[in-house]
Amino acid sequence: MKYYENIYKYGKILFYVLYFLAFFGLWDKAPIYFKDVDYFFKLFLAIILIILFNPLNKTTEFTKMHRNIVFSSGVFLLTTTTLNVFKTNSKLAYDHLKYLFTDVF
Image (cartoon, rainbow, N blue to C red; front, side, top):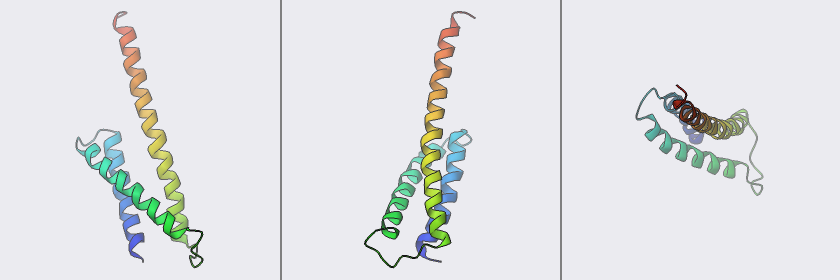
């Protein structure tokens, strides 16, 4: 197994564990670590995708691991974007409703 495959595999596990802990507020330091892991994992994935799928590189064979990296990159981008927006919007909606109904109750 190539070095980047190991980094990818363990980085993905670390990312999702920290994401789960931070999203549900199970560990108060998780958001601090998550921001760093999120940044470096995105950077790592971008560099790996650019290197592996560079149109000038004619020797890259598309393996099962490459397919896994590409699929997980898409899921990674989708989850970090949509779930964070959903959490932010639901918090804003809750605060707005709470403000509206404070005078009623």
